Structure formats: structure tokens, C-alpha cells
Image 1: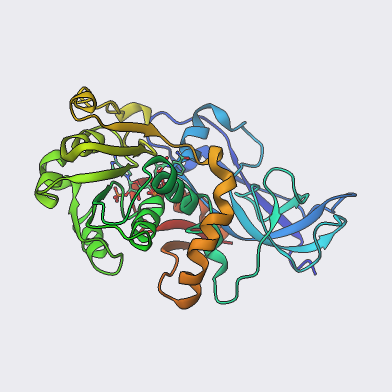
Image 2: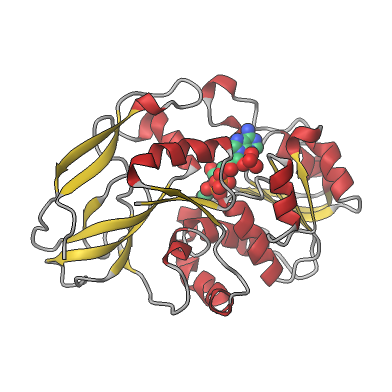
Length: 334
Ligand code: NAP
């Protein structure tokens, strides 16, 4: 079933100093590999590019080897009894066109077939992105119907998923921040938020206080720094914050402090501030799918994605995501 005879992969060739640049990546070609015993060959269809890849560039990823990332693809040849030709699989060998995988290792799994649910859902709202939002809400925040929620980087992958899932869970008001007026308009338009602001329009704490004059019960913070400080300021007594990420500080050269100056208000208001790491909650995957698949099938929810077309544009898609060019999850269509 293999259709392409040349495999392509991106390698990292240097470490970034500040915002990463395209010259740090090289596109390497090789013959398509043959599966050995226990392996299946996958042609990748969609790749995920994620903020954590920026962190991996500093020290996690080895230089001059294919990079890692979430991907979905189709099995084109198999010597793995757990995978058959034609199966659609999720695995972690992204940043390349072809991968040799083994079911059950490194997170490789055959994708469930949910009629009417697009494949891209498995890298967005049903993938690690949606799972992060889901566990932040249900486990860290113990989010309840009627509660008012603030989400930062709300127009991104985790942010849009948090908004969608909070609505399904019966949220009261949902307020989001994003990096442009157009994104703020999308948040209160088709993305279902009740209020939104562009964080460039003034101090985040003031913008949030205006958008949520009666305060908030809960926050999913993807940004850190002034966004986390704003969430603490707006929080009602006994509120909860799920700290998911600090995208504002991932580039060393222009790194602002992630810790907020009003941290001690956590004590004064009896708040709970807790970090979330999705890899500690992989057991919630079935729960996430049980909650969302009916909404995806009915069309009440569609995956929020931005797609960069063409494997050769993977680096463009990755850097674009870091710059905020995405609404919803940034994916690459191979
Ligand atoms: P994303 O939100 O889809 O993309 C990143 C977004 O960050 C951009 O679209 C951009 O949107 C925003 N951004 C970039 N620089 C910013 C800055 N200086 N200040 C404020 N916003 C900025 O990415 P994602 O995959 O959903 O991840 C969102 C956050 O969750 C990241 O912090 C990520 O590290 C974290 N995360 C954590 C876990 C975990 O297990 N803890 C798992 C997944 C993701 P704007 O146009 O709005 O600026």
C-alpha cells in the first residue's frame, strides 16, 4: 500500500537563542524504511506542533536526528500482529513523513473509529490538547456547573478546548484572553465565550476586571506572568487556578517572570493554585472521549484547528503557532 518511496524528516541542527529561527531545522531525505518483525510502517497524515517543542529545542531533542511529536497516520505495511494495513494510528513520531511503530509502545495505539468524527479531532480536542483542558477542568479545578471561568491563550488549542468543555460541563460565564482583536471577536463569536479581550490593550489585570466585574471562580492559565496575576486578582475567595503553561516565558531572550507579584493573595483569598501535567492523567482519555464524542458526532462541537498545508511547511507551522498565527490547535497536513 506504500505510495511514496522517499521518506522525509526534520532534524534540529542547533539550539535557539530567544525566538527560534528556520535555519535551526533541516529537511533530510532517506529511503522509506521496511518494517522489521513486530513493526508497522505508517505514512503520517497529520502532525501536531506544540509549545513544548520549543522547550525541547533547548536541551530535550538531540541534534541531527528526526524530531518527536504527536502524529496520526495510516499503516501501509505491517509485521506487527496488533496493527493491520489500513489501520489509522496515533503515535509520537511526528516531524517526519513515515514512521516505524509498534502497537502499545511509546503511546502508539490504533485510533477508535468514531463515525462522523474527523481524524484531526485525535490531535486536537480528543488528543493531548483536549485531554489537558479536560483534566485541568475536571480534576484540578473540580469545575462545577454555574461557575465562572477565565481562560488565557483562549484562542489556542488548549484554550478553545477548555472553552468547549467548560460549556459542556455547564459553565456560567467564560472569559478568554487572546493576542488580537480578531481572535477576541472569534472567542465571543463561534468559539462560545461570553467575554474576551486582546491582552495588548492594557494591563491584563485591568482588562480581566472589566470583562469579569463580578469576579471568577476558576481559571485555566496557559500564559503565566501577568495573566496568572490577573487571574489571582479577579478570583473570588476559595477559587481555583489550574496552571497549565507559561507560553509568555518560553523564549530565553525575552523571558518575563512567570511568577506573579500578587502570589500572596492566594493566602488572603484561600485560593488553590495547582500545576497540571497531562502525562499524569492519561487514564482520563476514555472519559474525555465518552464526554465529547456524542457532541462531535452531532456537530454541536467541531474540532477547532488551523491547518498548515504540506510537510515541507512544518517549521512554518511551528513558528507560526509560537507567534500566535493559529486559532485552535495548529496542525500540519502532510
Ligand atoms: P496554543 O495555545 O494553540 O498556541 C500557543 C498560543 O500562545 C499562540 O497561539 C499565541 O496566541 C499564544 N502566545 C504566544 N506568545 C504569547 C505571549 N507572550 N503571551 C500570551 N500568549 C502568547 O498552544 P497549546 O498547545 O494549546 O498550549 C497552550 C499552553 O498550554 C502552552 O503554555 C503549553 O505549554 C501548555 N500546555 C501544557 C500542557 C501540560 O501538560 N501542562 C499540555 C499542553 C499544553 P495569541 O495570539 O493569543 O497570543
